[in-house]
Amino acid sequence: MTAVLPFKILSAVADRRYILHMTPDERSPRLKRLDRLFTSYPLYFVTACTEDRKPILANLKVHEDFRKFCQTGLDRGVFVGKYVLMPDHLHLFVAFGEEYEAALVERRRSQSAATEGAVAAVCDRRSPDLRLSLLSDWMKSLKNSLSKTLRGMNVPAPHWQKGFFDHVMRSEESYSEKWLYVAENPVRKRLVPSPEDWPYQGEIYPLQARGHV
Image (cartoon, rainbow, N blue to C red; front, side, top):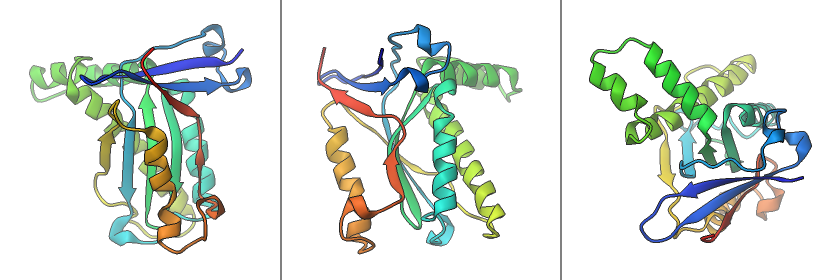
């Protein structure tokens, strides 16, 4: 049976769900017992750039390790959709489930903080600070993982610009239309004649946008 994991997108305009389809072999033993998992977290469109726009990402080893990192996300509640690795930056779509949220909250509670208010703000599951922390925490891990790969390839650090760019996909926006624009990046840069010819792009988990149900 195919599992369906909807990601509810909050909007005053409409309600759109991003559906994750998985075969039984792709699911952990715990998730095999579930038909549906609901979370209120949105789908993010993320861009991260290399330091000084160095062309260090578009190669087989980085691509392989990027996919391995993202594929381990299911058991941690992180779901990466479509992505493209350009020579000096990457684009991806990602959503977070309850497991990753709960793990982050527990880590924050166990850490010492300057004020109790700071801890409470990050541990409040309704707080925008928690949602920002979810994405920041995961992006830091992704960058660290790929930096380890790059060091193994004798690429000197620093590898990344500080921070990243993110955009919450609102319900009125189309995931597929946004991806079509992103997928054209290698063509616009005259690296390949068509998006399908670019070897460093793909999809980890198929997130499908559907209208209000």
